Image 1 (cartoon, rainbow, N blue to C red):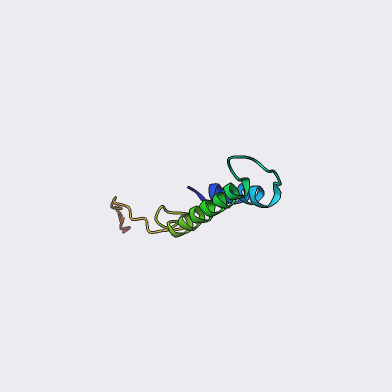
Image 2: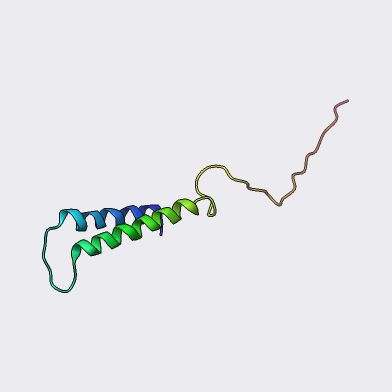
Amino acid sequence: MGIGTSIFLIAVGAILDFAVDVNTRGFNLHTIGAILMIVGAIGLLFSLIFWSSWGGFGGGTYISSRRRRVVLDEYL
């Protein structure tokens, strides 16, 4: 789960938990909203922890396996 998906789950969960005022039978929308916010927060935390393991943005340590050949010409 990426950062965008985690933020989306947090936003949908917050809408269901705080903004929706509906009474339903069989399931509680506020509980579903709280569960979505918790899952989104855990996904966001894991995405930030493992950010460097998949590369992320920026430099990094890339080592090329090819050797570079340098040819020097001497001028007389």
